[in-house]
Length: 526
Image 1 (cartoon, helix red, strand yellow):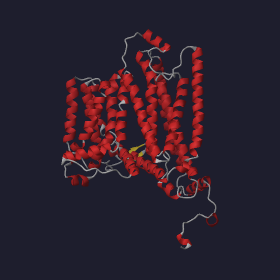
Image 2 (tube, rainbow, N blue to C red):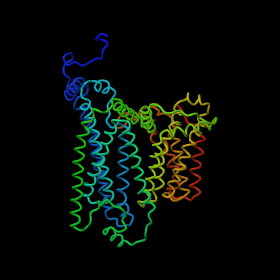
Image 3 (spheres, rainbow, N blue to C red):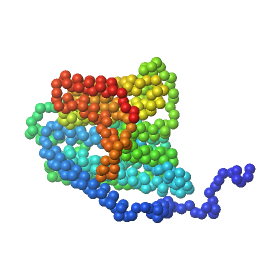
Image 4 (cartoon, rainbow, N blue to C red):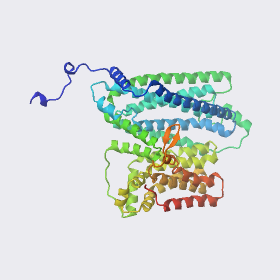
């Protein structure tokens, strides 16, 4: 065997020394600046507009949160005490589960296909190349955790010292969850077990929400509520985040809580450094898949097509999965399509777990005492739970050739493919019935969910025809504005008699008419 047939080995004497990641990024930055076609002031105008918008939104939102914090701090009812005691046990597992699932869906460490092809395949240290993206993810999670934690605890009427300390605690916990996802991204088995932990966290958030909603409400006076608030009687489980009025207890409790936050922040910093040393174990396929997902999500967001966002995530999931075990279909005509749709939904069981985990929303709203908002909260949560199960209908409505191959009219095909999601909607609404509290309202919620999800899944692609509309973001086609509202318009229409407190007859008739008209009209494909 000649030398040319043997394996290729890297010899620094032939190609030179391997550059460091910092030197390589510096060279790339210099090269990009040499070919830049925009001046510094043109870029500064865009950056200034973004910063000014963020400052205005932050000032307005901060003022609203401060006003709501003052109102909530003056609430002495039994419901306010229960919400303050139980909400941490609902919010923290829910935030952890959401963080884990979102980050594992993206990567969390990602890179573009160009980076994966030109840089990650070189002998340059992969950990050094991926470290900027890793730091960006961790910093984003920390900032989001701080903001979300501060807003939630401020809305509960907590003192501002406790709000800031709790925000630091939640930010640190979410950073630990982000570090766990980076560790799980290194192997497929770790990612699977981490997703199972996220499912358990969703279940852990549902249990206290149901307990809060079903907890009996004693008829006690305002004085007894104040006494129970300060003595801790009949408050349920608590994390000890609300400070007491006793000066000694306040000082010791706050110092202890602040010490716990400081220790957790130090642990996060140490873990961040340790995990950054293991970035070279990340596979190039998973890193590039995350970059492609972000690019697809950016394209879907630019067209304001909510359904396309779900399609991008689903395509990435099945691309990484590779293959599934095929099963022989049963039945004929419409029964065969229903049977295949049922098996297609079962192939992604985690979606079903997440869907039932969303039951925490109506129960939490009911437990918080906002009974008027329970139907709309249940409808929105049910919409998010059922919509991913209609991917087959969306594919059929976007492919005229597939509809012709199936041999069905598109209107009939929409009815057949909505059978399995409709049955799941009925089960989901029945599980939410104790929180909704009325059979007619439960029917309206189910009708709103299935009509809204089917309308959004069978909607035609965005239209770019017609003159452009001038906006601060640039010229926008007018057909894009109707994309986010599709589906939610029928949802609001079905819930209108419930929100306006009409009679039970109208609560049943209006959603029924909406369902009949929605399935009777043939969806447009062009």
